Amino acid sequence: MSLTPAELAAARVFRAAQRALLERKNASEPPGITVSVHVRNVRHDCEAKGGKSVSLELREHYAFSPELYVCRCGVVEVFNVDSSHWDCDGGVKVPARRFGFIFTEGRCGCGMTARSGDSRLVDPAVRPPAARAVVS
Ligand SMILES: [Zn+2]
Ligand SMILES: [Zn+2]
Image 1 (cartoon, rainbow, N blue to C red):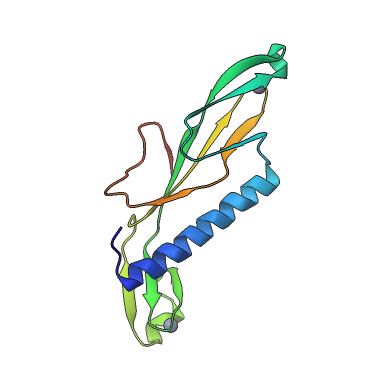
Image 2: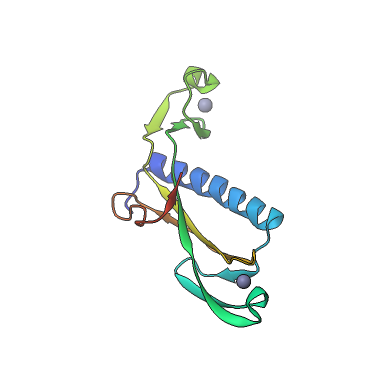
């Protein structure tokens, strides 16, 4: 990705916010299996199926970045018309959907969850959501 300084700042803030959400999810619903974000299927010895090895599909969760405002003072925030940073020293709007954030998750019938421990920041123009992605 070749980014302007404002896009770079927006990308950092968006990724940090999405990673924080993912960390909160991992803390409140710890996964039984942690995998790489590049893994599409994982096997699990399911106790509900008598210890049989079952294959779980990891589904892509894809979040688009919101419209962000990168103020010259250094603040990056979700664009809103009431922002106090309008009276600041000027800034740049980064349009919505400029970035995509991906993690993956799968759930077995027994309730066991597999989730990616890592994540990806992508350019939606190059890497749009996968066909069956959960998009937000
Ligand atoms: Zn299971
Ligand atoms: Zn400002």
